[in-house]
Image (cartoon, rainbow, N blue to C red):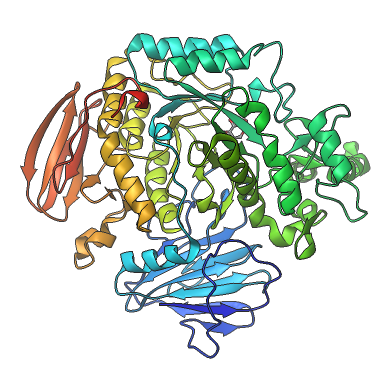
Length: 620
Ligand code: GLC
């Protein structure tokens, strides 16, 4: 059952697809004091949900903010990452889901201030609350997902393996990457183009010097079964004579400052403006621009910097320079030095900037800050709607960094700028079920880690987990050590792991499809499948994948084995140097040895493996 409580919505966020009557007078499981919703948790209450966030699967004990944020430092102290996924699932004496549908900032204190008290405080009361009840955790999620509509289903090739790197700056770099995968016999379906392919970071442009013939490059690679997936950033370079800028400026399709002038920000291209994705006409116009690349044979994209990320605004920069000028160098001390440094640090993603520009929406002129969490979602919609036309229904791939619930119908998400840290393998595992609850099924993290330097053992372990994630992409930041599957000399172990992904792909893809069609989760905490098992409830580092499989990856440095909990009798499947062996194990705890390069997973019923292939075009 779903009940809807409506406060003062200023516009439809687009998250919900079912038009439900408002539940006047129905009891809310929260008490409402001012703008704060409060719920008293009993000792054992667990809280799930909130999509892409730091910390465990059970989120109790920390405080989270939904405010899409470009922050590459994903540590446990963070309250917000790139997504705003306002669904929580309370698992205690009372079991229910609660979705807080609001386009602006909202805080979830899940026992942080007071360990027994959960509060939810939206910054603005432009809000609808949906309370979802059902007789099991899975059923609550199913019911919630029926409210928000079917998840995005990308084409099957998008489930292949992809290699990315910020720093493939020429066509030769891309060809070399393809050749080295081929030479090593490692399957691959996609190579990603980061901002380096563009002409001075201008969206929908291609550098004529470094990528002189993208059409030919795309065709050549496609004939080998490899697709190119370019990045598109939200901000558009201010440059007269650049068609996208000129047209958008003339038509009034960029976000405006209080005086009605284009609001100028600094992102990768330097002086830039922000397409107004909340204006349906502007969104349609921007979407049509993808044609410049689909005409060159491109069928997939990743949308980035769409929180939107602002390095600075022109207004903020001028103000900071004034502040710094006022400082008296002769009086500098540690405090004033840090003060001066903070003047510049504060420029990035500054709330004052988010409060200084406006959207022209069907509900009238709205201040960006009040609808901040919808920006990335509507960029995804813009691309999705256009690509369905340009490439044909279901034939293209789109995923995004920023998101809001609703965008799960239009594209996937990746989890942004993580690091080459062991803890980030676990973090990625723990983010997946939360994302799935909120409808985001097509997801994955930057394998090997984006920032920091990767090592061979980290990459092997990360891949042994990520071979089960729908989006399987290795990606790294400019300036970091190479981390392609061929970068560490010996390629055999990588070949075996990535080959296993393809051998499992029929099961993984079918499970994904089933989850989409039936509003199920593809990744589930053990708790969701074994509600009567108190031991399973506490397991935070294993996941169910589809109906028949469970994973328990290694995520600590130098570990050769780990404890695994089997909530029922299962078959342990081991891949060792490409060979598969099995062993029956009883319900309970097991200490499982997993030497580096082996992959171990567990099945409830047989999961058939396909024959090894070089890419998805060779699968039946
Ligand atoms: C952002 C993205 C990252 C990308 C980089 C350069 O940091 O999250 O994936 O490589 O920008 O485009």
